[in-house]
Image (tube, rainbow, N blue to C red; front, side):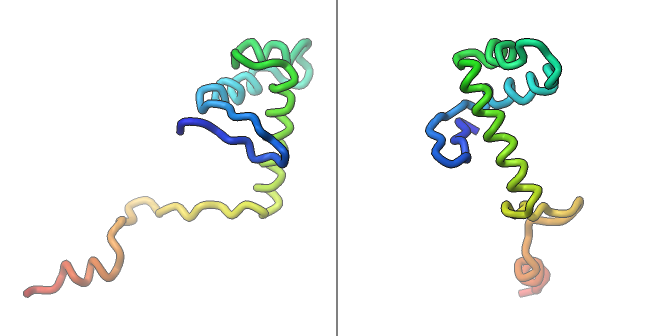
Length: 97
């Protein structure tokens, strides 16, 4: 993943995958009760301000709400042991020519 274009309406910021991961990890460390939470998170992420970190948090909450409300379809994952080969390809492979 090269960058993460934020999905919140009217958002023009772009964070790298590394910044996003640092942000998410920092959220796990600094909960809502932490003094200077946004300052500490911004320092960990680097190259960003407290306001940008707060905005990223609002975007994250918005995205989570969209997912939980069913507005974003979940991907269809393969089951364990399931092959990438389609049924038609399997039938063709089993033909003896």
